[in-house]
Length: 327
Image (tube, rainbow, N blue to C red):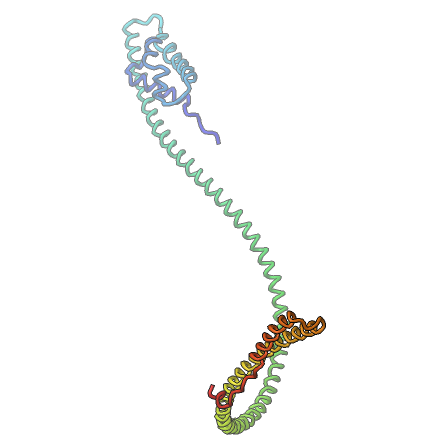
């Protein structure tokens, strides 16, 4: 909607007449007088808006109407100056009255225009608010339409699912009825089996109690026997430990005797080897002849061999058993 012009020709004309009336010059006599009272700058300042070219054009038209076609061009031939002065005064009074009416009408028009501007401004604000609300409502309506469409689709899907669930529920109810019958029969059978098992359990419980008492008595008897055997075994273990200590002692003595015998055997081996050497020397001496030098070489060797045989060939006397036991 196009907005009305800020300054209209009627507004300009009313403002010019008001400025002339306020100046007290209801009938300007010349263009200079008119321009001194009303100018483009003053008119624009009075109106508060307007294009200077447009204001100048309207102002020229008003000037032509009020000045050039006014009293300056009013001339009646053959009219006495007194009558002309009275006619001029009458005309000025009429113009003053007209200008007063124009000022009043302008004030009324200004008040009406101000009220209309306020009403128009309020209407524009209300229109903008309504447009904003209408836009919001349209957006909400579009969102609600989309949501409604989505809800309808969901409703159709839920209806289809409901039908499927109803059919499944019917089938499950039939299965439930069958299962209830089977469960009732199974419960009856189970009750009978439970009663039989309970009777059997009571019998087994009594038998178990009797067997437990017998086993407890047998265990007590066996425990007493094992305790007696444990005491005897403890005594035997003590005796065996004493025998083990004695045998360990004898084994140690035998080991010492064996070591001594091994040493004596090694010494005898040395003696035998020396005797063999001596016999070899004697045989060699016998083969070469019995010269005094040979006999002197053989005699010390023989003495050495005899001394070694006499020192190591003596047998060791065994200790008595009482000494071994004491050790």
